[in-house]
Image (tube, rainbow, N blue to C red):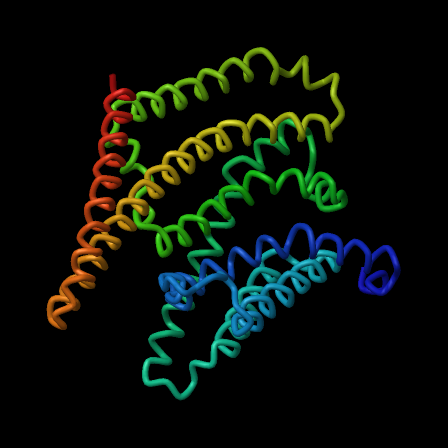
Length: 320
């Protein structure tokens, strides 16, 4: 297999699998580790416009690309899975430590220990998510791991649910630092009887949906008539369906509630700024400006009162 490594087919397979399958997975691993270590605390700053800045490129993309490429080279060479995983983890850790420039810092050992723990945790999360459904799909499709590894299409389709769950976790890390609700997903839902009932209904619907699909579609007789690729597509579609609609509902509710809080905070800041301006004018004896500002306060207060009234009426209408 090593002799085939430098052939056109070998290089093409390694590059395609690296870019479209392994890079997204290792990128999650890198971001998971660095976020939990505390390397992206600047996301909390209002001035932060980008999640990954130029000074992050090396420490994020270098381990991602190197480890992803290494994984596929070792897989193509047929290296033992456990040896491959050990090498990947070791290289990952070395690059993460070197690219984060922690040497010389008094807390370097503490940082390295935390990075190791979160790196291992991220690795196990990836493996657990894969093993939740992939063995079942392979069994139902009568496919071996070797057959899947030999087909880019099958490998890509099989990883879709894992990717969705992985990047949902990264999304949680982002909104926890960059939104007013601080990642409290269930707060806007549990605070509303209507939304709570809707969430419960969606969960029940998905359970019934899975039962019906399993009994009517995913049966041995039905699957015998389909190709292996069609079976994988069908099963992955069934797995993705409840994940997508539940996540869409949670994200939608979270976004609307966070926007509502953001608008109220913005209105409160306007009042605070007006109050501060009036205080400054009083201290300087600018009573004409005070009169003008008070008129502005009147208009702002009326607008805020109308806004709050409309929100309350909307909530009452929804609950009713």
